[in-house]
Amino acid sequence: QKEVEQNSGPLSVPEGAIASLNCTYSDRGSQSFFWYRQYSGKSPELIMFIYSNGDKEDGRFTAQLNKASQYVSLLIRDSQPSDSATYLCAVRGWGKLQFGAGTQVVVTP
Amino acid sequence: DTEVTQTPKHLVMGMTNKKSLKCEQHMGHRAMYWYKQKAKKPPELMFVYSYEKLSINESVPSRFSPECPNSSLLNLHLHALQPEDSALYLCASSQSQLGIANSNQPQHFGDGTRLSIL
Image (cartoon, rainbow over all chains, first blue to last red; front, top):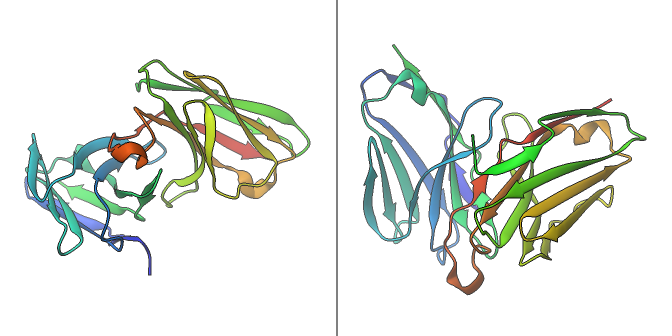
């Protein structure tokens, strides 16, 4: 079983709609969770991080964490073509991050 | 542009060459990381330096040799690489090493060095 799991996609989202990305993790003791956006050929860019159960909003992005279900999600509201990228979920392990394989999001005009 | 600067952006080298990748940050971060990323795969951790000391080596072959001359600089020395080592090499930094002393500080990545081995 992979430690951090994401659907690889592609997730096709109409422009203006909400994109919903999911991530599950296996280590129940995990404390911090990160979402990175990566455009093709570029480096990962930090979008959100969340430590507490519940929702955290930043602009068009909302991260949701449910530690009991070992589940973290990212919502992108009013999706734009510029949101087309791969989104990496990362979970803090001891001294390092565990990355999921990433979900490719394609926003269609 | 990121606050973690990597040079060079691109590097092509033969299997017998010796080259170095460089990474610099001026955010006062005390943890620095090297990752390797192949196409359509997530970053794979190679090394972690915490307070200028090697903290994690993820069983990386000895043809990759990291060095941390000071708290702002991180090098990766390359020697006798193989074609399968062609990848994007990413440097990252964080305020302190994740998991140490309950640190949750996020990692910030540089733009990477795209390495091609002929």
